[in-house]
Structure formats: C-alpha cells, structure tokens
Image 1 (cartoon, rainbow, N blue to C red):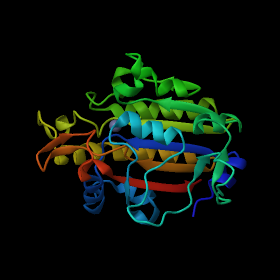
Image 2 (cartoon, rainbow, N blue to C red; image 1 turned 135 degrees about the horizontal axis):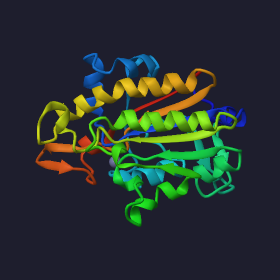
Image 3 (cartoon, rainbow, N blue to C red; image 1 turned 90 degrees about the vertical axis):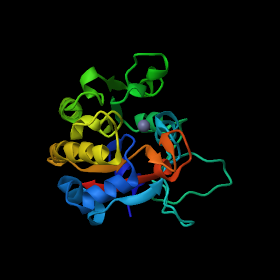
Image 4 (cartoon, helix red, strand yellow; image 1 turned 90 degrees about the horizontal axis):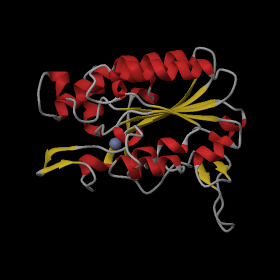
Length: 264
Ligand SMILES: [Zn+2]
C-alpha cells in the first residue's frame, strides 16, 4: 500500500502521467501481447488495474485529478485515498492519506515546498484559447509546443525530453511533474498507416510511447525516489454499440488503465 503522507512529508517527488484517451482493454491487450515491455516491467505485478474514471473527457477528469481525486476500483471497497482536500470536521481520514489544507492538490503541494510543472499534450493544455489555459495555469510552470500534440508522430519523445530537462533544472527541490501523453489521443491512425482511428491504431500509439515512458522513469529515478502514477483520463469509443468519441458514460470511456508505485 502506498503511504502518500509519508512520501510527501519526506519531500519525494511525484510523477503523474495521463495517457490521454487510452482504453483499458487496449492497454491490457497490448501489455499481454508483449507490445509494451517497459510498462510491463514497471507496473506493480506487471499489470494494469482496471479503474473507473471520475470524468468522461479531458477537462473534468483532470479537474478531478488536480483536486485530489483519482480513478476508483470498480468494486464497493476502495483502498485509502493517496490524498484529499481537508474534509469537514465530522469526517475522519486514514493516516496514510495526505491531507492538504488548500482548494486543490497543486496548491496543497506548493505549501509543502513542491514545484508543480505541467508538460502539456492535447490542446486542453496548449493555452491557444482561454479554455486551453484553465488547466495549465494551475501549475507553477507549464510547457506546450505543437510537437507535443498527437498529430506529431514522435510527440512522446519531445514531451519526455522536456520533462527530463525540467527534472534536471529543479534537481534541488521536490517536484509534482505532470505529463499528458497525447500519442494515444486521436489522431493516431498514422501509427498504422491509416486515415481513421481505431483500437488497433491506439494500441500502436501506446507501443510507440512505451519506450519513452521507460526512458522517462529511468531518468527520473536514477538518483531519487519518486511516487509514480500512470493512468488514462478517460477512454474512447470507436463504434462500440454505435458510439464514437468521449464525453459519454459508455464502458469504453469509463474503464481506464491505472498503476501507482514508488521507485528509486
Ligand atoms: Zn483526454
């Protein structure tokens, strides 16, 4: 069990990666088929957990994540939360849960000396429009360039290069380093030479990103301990029961892969 309160009071850094739009079934099938060897080597037990997302598209899911909520197990009993906003007095919180006395997790970590950094991917993190600034402006520092976004076939390489540069520059203080991997978000048909997007092309996008995710974790954990969380923000429908896209309460969107572990 992860004791986030201990990790944060020890000022260990935190890496939070969202694999945008990655379906649980796509992630699980790719892992079982040996197409994501770096993830298989890092995830606890070599497996993704199936969880339910708190939001069906990028904005509500990340709003929830940055306010301390994470995807939940699809069962009545839940493990202790890693962190939560200070609740009203009548509610008790488990000792391994980090409680922040702030309106959101990022501000709460800031009170404990963390620098919060956003490596954007999809356009909700691009600041190209007023709404595209809502999420990145929650951070102390945010980065986005067109080559971080899903139309670029080598987007994860560019994102990971930026993330490692940030970690190197702030080696003297704890980080909350967030990376929104865009490769698994449409369009990804180009990974299989197709003009349409499908579960098969999303799997190919994930197989591409796998090497760079391994490179990111290797680089970060070489000389310090990190709490690492990787999950999808939501899934995506590719004609399932006739549905396409996200923002809908369909199982292809609600079920997400999740993994959390301490490394280094
Ligand atoms: Zn998303």
